[in-house]
Image 1 (spheres, helix red, strand yellow):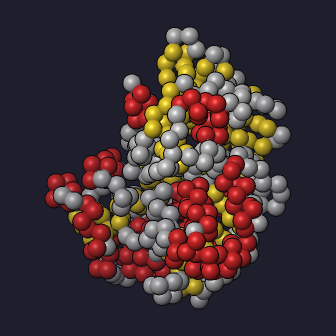
Image 2 (cartoon, rainbow, N blue to C red):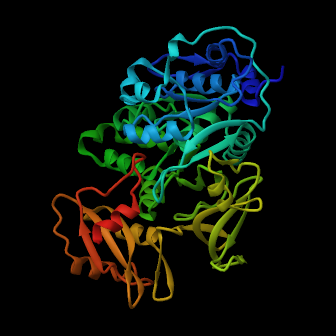
Image 3 (cartoon, rainbow, N blue to C red):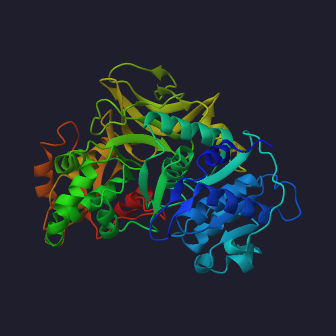
Amino acid sequence: MTDLPIIQRAKGFADRTAFFGRGGEVTYQNLLHRSAAVASGLLAEKADLEEERIAFLLPTGADYAAAQWGIWRAGGIAVPINGGATVPEIEHALTCASVRRVVVAAERLSVLGDLPKRLGLEVLDFTGLEGNSPLPEIAPTRRAMILFTSGTTNKPKGVVSTHASIEAQVTALVEAWKWQADDRIPLFLPMHHLHGILNILCCGLWSGAAIEPFDKFDADAICARVGEGVYSLFMAVPTIYVKLIKWLDAPENAGKRDGVIKGFGAMRLMVSGSAALPASIHSAWSDLTGQMLLERYGMTEIGMALSNPYAGERRAGMVGLPMPRTDIQLVDDAGKVVSGEGAVGEIWVKGPAVFREYWDSPAATAESFEGDWFKTGDIATLEHGYYRIMGRSSVDIIKSGGYKLSALEIEAALLEHPDITECAVVGLADDEWGEIVAAAIGLTESATLTLEELQTWASARLSAYKLPRALLVLDALPRNAMGKVTKPAVKALFT
């Protein structure tokens, strides 16, 4: 029998450590054994799950990986549950994917609320999945995983990846970022999202690397380990880098600061993604640690499509160049492919890493493709050979006075103000301009910033744009279950 490639590779790393930390060490051999038992338990008397959707809700770490591998090895489709989502949001994912069985750690069962009874779900305790049944042979073209989109502009859709597309995403990252078997990396990102699942977990286990899992980001615990020189790789979202800068600047951490900075500086690679990284944070992190963060661009449907180079110039505010075996083109509003310096258009992506379909939604799938090209809905421009993301065509591009303004760029500029802790920029309908720029901002506790003061301050930084003409001060911006700001909700606050 031919195993899935990730299983074949794990057999070559059998004696190496896959996970380490407070839970003890788990080898690749342990993972292989436990995932085979999970697969057998799921199969029961069946020879093949034949793409049954199996949801799972487990803590980050070895049990999560064993469940994922077990579902795959049994011929099922893995559906990770967002443990931080509301019950209605979880219900949408389970009903959309027609899930009937859920693998759960006992301590996480309460997250499901009344769904097991109301939806007639069979809840399987992870620790009770055992057996040694023969496992089916899984073709690369088979469906492997359903992850749900963030739902910032519409109802979350189930993105179906095959084993082949996951392998293409992983191998492109391993090649581009030079993953090595002796890499060691912390994993504290959400495990229902591509960043944690693919960029860290799958790439790490593909490479024979060692992962230290954390159930959530804990600055004290992670900085302590960084100070011990534990990690060679680090991947996080911009918000976490902001928190780390604050941690390093906090007076109570002064005695630990130098050691932690040294630990960050010694890593071979640090990556920022899942949201735009303000240039000010990029610069501040470089000044503190000597590390030039590598920014990249990707989405659930395509994995990582663009990346600043591992060995080469990493430009703040840019997402770099196409990943290996990935084709990129920009398409303007008229449907014409545009190229060259200053070109602006929607990013279309083609290649083996592109997802297969939206689950049970042929209309949405057809609408998102033009032939083999996936239409991302993101607008980008080319500057000196590198791509720069301007934002989502539906929510981040403001058409004002004949110009296309990037809400993300305006947000990044506003965040440079010392009194602004967070912000969201949206376009509001206007008879004269088409759209005008509006900003919802969160201020520091001591701030007394007025609209007039903000406009005066911003004039030098936003000279290329019309200044924000509306200002709404909030304690916190509206966010979805994934923690992302929901632009439609922000826009609704102004109307």
